[in-house]
Amino acid sequence: MKAIMLMFDTLNRRMLPTYGCDWVHAPNFKRLGEKTVIFDHAYVGSMPCMPARRELHTGRHNFLHRSWGPMEPFDDSMPEMLKNNGVYSHLVTDHQHYWEDGGGTYHTRYNSFELVRGQEGDPWKGEVADPEMPDMIGMKGMHGLMRQDWVNRKYIREEKDFPQALTMEKGLDFMRQNRDEDRWFLQIETFDPHEPFFAPQKYRDLYPHDYKGKHFDWPPYGPVQETQEEIDHVRYEYAALLSMCDHYLGKVLDTMDELDMWKDTMLIVNTDHGYLLGEHDWWAKSIMPFYNEIAHMPLYIWDPRSGKAGERRKSLVQMIDMAPTLLQYFGLEVPPDMQGEDLKDTIDHDKRIRETALYGIHGGHVNVTDGRYVYMRAPVSKDNTPLYNYTLMPTHMRSRFSVEELQDISLQEPFSFTKGVQTLKIKASGYQHLHTFGTLLYDLKADPLQQQPLQNPELEKQMIDMLKEKMEANEAPPEQYVRLGI
Image 1: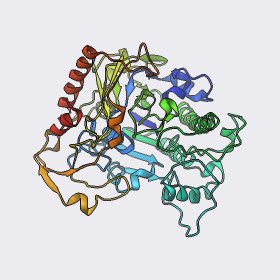
Image 2: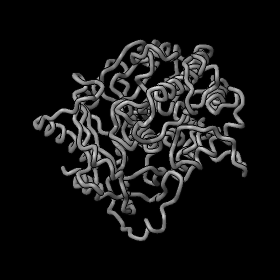
Image 3: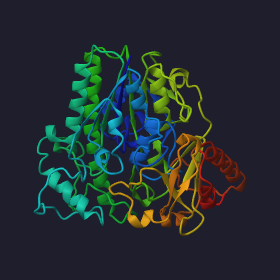
């Protein structure tokens, strides 16, 4: 038995033909839907990129205990468990966060890995002179990242030079090289269609439109201040990059056809989260409540044991389910600290594995859904306190914790999942503006676009009870209940 996970970053469910979109050119995603089981209620867990990948490894939520950071010494790692039990695990990725301070312990959990450089502001090519940059709309306060991105773009001249193209080809090479071997797991992971929405011209030509504004392929993280013309343009730029993803998805499907891999190879196609392209008058993610454009994910799985294809599943599933599903697929025991569930029977006959799903970002709203109602609980104080990081790996995304942050620390008694190990308890600062959004409650059946928050005290009490139950199951620190006022 073999397994392949093809993981995109920032793949918007609502822009895919299998989820109702009729204008994005993505024929291979439609083809994928015919070959797999499609999940209609897949939700994020811990946000964003590396917290989601920690869930992929550990099968448990982490956002209530820690912000973005590395794997911890006490973490169970699915690909490492495979490696240690005779299942070869290989990662091919252009996701540059793996080689930053906050992601450096992930890729080394695999037997082997290939890293492709050049995405976003990856410090790849060194040029002292400033690159020529167009007059653009974009990420305010992120000049260094954007400067490096424009240095990198100088070295990406043809489609074959794009990091996604290189990543996919390396993944296909692994498939061909190991076609006759058994018991391996391949994770092909591309940063696309994450911003900036930089794609070859042939994909942009799929979306002709008359735009005469400034260069705009990297939305700012903040409220929408752009014109409708600019909003429409950047949506087309995203769609172009998504069409590129569709093209390379097709290559993976073609290779599985060519090598007759469907009979003994699981295929998972997934993402870490979605993205706001002007909906709710916001761009991007992380700094606003997690509306369904961000939280409600696409997910496709082919399991050769059941052979189910072209069917849909209604059960609530999350990223934490990937690790136990893959471990049990290869006949391995699931560690007791994993909270996810094996999806074998859900794939086969839509077995319900949970009543509610918990999700959020460290220091943000804490959210729960039962598939119909979504409850987003906001911090009750303007300063969003109390809040702590519990970690033995004190790094942020692109930096170590500062000396000032570390001057007032204490040791925390072990949580059950730290395997008897104490952690550092470090004061953290959450997004202080999130208090202004307030707590939000939506009925997705009556209001799928989440335009009209409900005012229903009885229903809210039920959702608070659900939220507390999920937080208790995740062993949330006591201050999280104080921060949320529950």
